[in-house]
Length: 258
Image 1 (tube, rainbow, N blue to C red):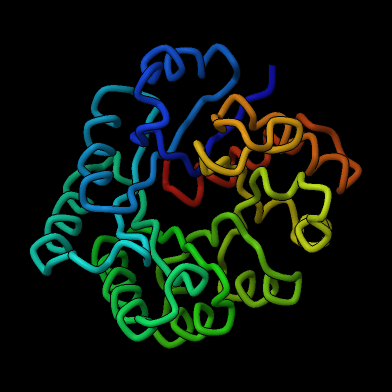
Image 2 (image 1 turned 30 degrees about the vertical axis):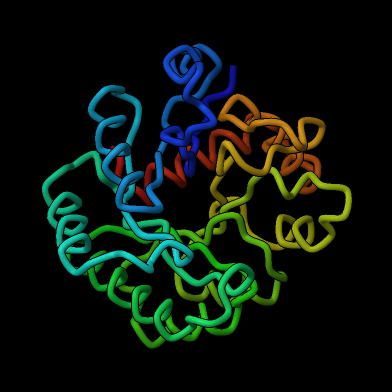
């Protein structure tokens, strides 16, 4: 059985309310050795802290998604920083970034929150998990000007071209590959997989979202990671075990898990 690192999941999501415990309990026996549960709101960050306390193979990241910044206070960001600094199982700040698909009217506020959370990562010595949708140039520009390369991290669920991927690789970032890369029309994603060195790729599901083919439209979970690994292996012409082994070591290195 291949060893797999789930680098981005949302098991606090209500989609898992009916069977969360049973599903999580099944992961290790299916080769899922590590899971990083990623916050996106203050509430999901608090629930992430609870999950990583309950499950030994779970780690967490705290951050505010760009679509969720409206009611976030200075005190909330201070809590995120304090928790991240104090808890060794909190291994990143995220997910943070820019989303111009859902929100086009608050671009400056999004940029401000992005910079503030990059600064939290810098002060706590943690990498960042970057969400970027329909905001390729501004994401790169903010990261460059805010010296995000000091922190390192991953651009998760990467949806841009290989030329954009090159910019983030130059900054020392990893590229997160998930279920969308298996979609029939995912030409750009397959070009990115072919272009990016395996040593700079992380496996992720973003569950419960973005299930890979043939499960598209159904609830996603880390149990689908082998499908994503198989797709990467097919594009690169290498073995699935190699994909799983290398991406696991990549994630352990990036997240500082020894």
